Length: 78
Image (cartoon, rainbow, N blue to C red; front, top):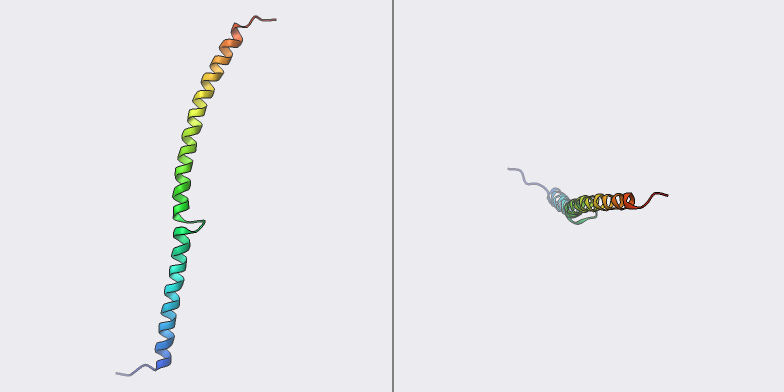
């Protein structure tokens, strides 16, 4: 069996360490950066809350419009 020179082993180890560090950096960005999965999940929850608020406000608006038109019809015409 042929022995590998020290320089080759050193280069392989350095490349492995650099690859690990780069993968760790990319994972850090994906899971805790401004475009991360956590941010995405937070935005999904916020979107659902806003949709719910819109529906509630539409119901309130419809009731207020109904009340308004009923009151407008009660006023004497000029």
